[in-house]
Amino acid sequence: MEAQLHSLVGILGPTAVGKTRAAIQLAEEFHGEIVSADSRLVYRGMDIGTAKPTPQEQRRVPHHLIDLVEPGESFSLAQYQQQAYATIADIHARGKVPFLVGGSGLYVRAVLDGLAIPRVAPNLERRQELEQQATAALYTRLRQMDPIAADRIDPRNKRRIIRAIEVSETAGEPISRLQSERAPSYRILRIGLTLPREELYRRINARVDAMMASGLVEEVKGLIDRGYPLDAPAMSGLGYRQIALYVRGEATLDEAVRLLKRDTRRFVHHQYSWFRLDDPRIRWFDLSKAGYDPIRQTAANFLRQSPEDVVGGVPRS
Image (cartoon, rainbow, N blue to C red):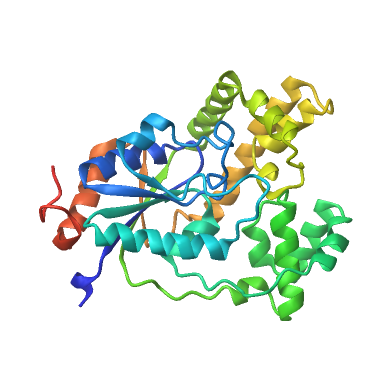
């Protein structure tokens, strides 16, 4: 029965590790399509600060769940999960292999683990009350209420902290307990990419420098000029909130860049709380020691066990 299940390959890991490059290579070789699992790539017009796959990369293989909504629109985890499952089903129906790619732990878990998302309606009045409090104080409160959820949320992500508190208060129990799992009916291969921290931090610094050279300041200015408030979910992401400090005259450009690099390094720490190196379900590859070939071979061995998922019956080698 298991051999009849469709296959799904996840490419996981921290920001700047090289997930996009590896995923495109695998998708090209094994007749695949990429399903984004990045909470920031859903927003249109936010290309540089999100390190969105370039038009050239997106032409190499089909990409899905990118540029879905405007930066001022809301896009919930439940919406993402529903669209992701529909997209994966469509890819399977066309005889292709879906590659779920991203570093947003909650999005990845929503798909690969079948996360049951609490159906708690937004309480706008309560949110406004919580918005008046400092982010640090809210995070301390969440840690007291639900340390498991707190470990998985960036202490600077006020929107997610407030939502976790809101859900826990409304439901009367921690949000981490409500987020039960129901495994989806796929054969799943989890490929994790990692690097020594020093090398990863070097890549992060280089990526930020490249973003600045590509026009990140102009991108942030353009979004602000279009009327998107800085407290909008899209604008709270890495790159946008830091550079907005410079645009608003609250920091020098050098200081804003320093904060962006620092906050991205901190974000890596939280990503590793989602993608744990001791998780037995994940096949980890240290890219400082192994190149592409071991990753390709792992994917080939997995997909050959399910030939109906690959055009022509056998992945190209």
